[in-house]
Length: 478
Image (tube, rainbow, N blue to C red; front, side, top):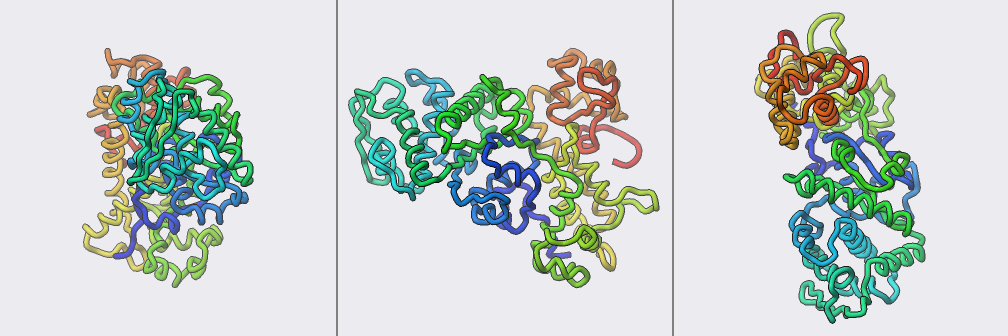
């Protein structure tokens, strides 16, 4: 019991991601050459994909069904350090001549793509000049560089710009526009084609741009999508791949958005995939693996190679068969899946991990063993879920300040099901209202329509995941 740990809920804090990562069909689809966009609710594993490919690229290549030997993998955003663009950088650039979001992202992609080619043979030209100035610097401050190059490539060009990094200075001459974004991208395309390589430039955590100004964030990210699509068409060896929350993606508006339909992976998790996730994460601890292997020897090898029967037998050494006693009670995985699924029907691995880690903490609080063969008890799991619901509401729903008053209206309600008329009346004079209000609550997963769509359903339900956190007061089991 002491060693049981299902790992971190945020992938960037998980040092053992390579040992805990579960390959799903979405992973296999992501490695397809034509993918440009990955969307999913918060907690569906976007950052896990990003972290795996940027920090554990060797493993990502090994488990991929496709040969990625001709692919260079680099981060556009996702590490949230000074080498990446931030809200402040954009705010400063907005004062420059000729600014728009599309132009900014084209320049930024050119810079990030160019710096990713440091190990290739680069011919003379603007890209080599850029690499000479900053290519070997490990803690590049991208903000000042962006502003300097913006003036060279877009704004009013000075006669000369000096780029200094760790004592090394390079002078780029302007005046006649010897530097422009297209030239940089052409250099990158030629360099990649000559080396028979493709660059994947991954963008994660871009929802952190303008976090308090949703309208400006929408404009900025629409510009990123537009620039990304244009660059992929014109320079096929440069492939930006963007990982984005579903609710943000739906709000974006840019030309040819529909062209991404067949280039999009929407992350989803089945009960079966959650089972593999839980077992692999639990058995990442050697002590737990040895305990399980005493009854299911196959876990000592690759867990993904187990039969489903052996996997379930291994899980049966960690979890109880049901959370409540009785012959007709839901099996443990059905119970968990029902409680980590939002109004879009998306089962969330983040909340699955959080639920099991919270149950582990409660098991310690109880001060007793779960049973002769179990690591977690029914009581620990039952007590864990209300805490998870509260944490989900406190964190995820806080990201929607425009709907905060709507959320508060649910407090004290004694049912999880509402007619269309009752739900609209409950929200009173709040804005958004009516069908638009229903659409927004559904898009963030807070309500689901029963027997119909948002436009036609007459009854809506709040998923179990949110009931306790919203303050619903209901009899019976959470």
